[in-house]
Length: 133
Image 1 (cartoon, one colour):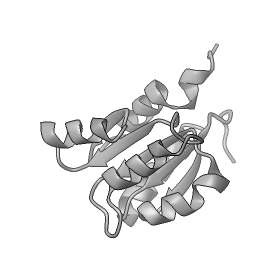
Image 2 (cartoon, one colour):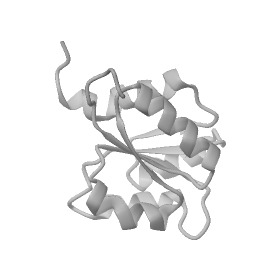
Image 3 (cartoon, rainbow, N blue to C red):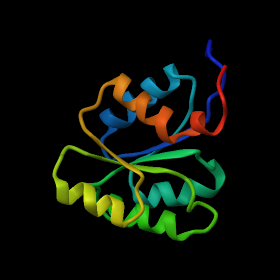
Image 4 (tube, rainbow, N blue to C red):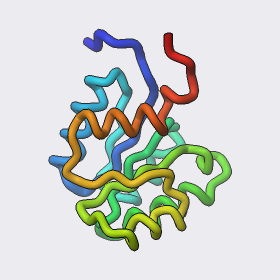
């Protein structure tokens, strides 16, 4: 189905079905394998089996928010080097700083475009690990 080479596995953690679906479409168009999680608990439950190369994590989620989810992922030696990009509709300095404190590599404001999402993947995801020709 995909006309592009496999680029890597990206996990999208967001309680919004719309955000998850649009991110999955954009990422698959970019040649990535996509794993979806509807909240932090769901993401943590599937982390070992999915082994993502990059994680997009919404900040505002029920039960376990994005900051807590990121901190738990980063505290696990097996996943501490996996880049986490925080997703939020808020674009404040405090939110971005708090994301860095818990170990996030980047912060993407919603709503995002396909180009913005794929640019973040190019900068932080599996493509940066390999040289492309």
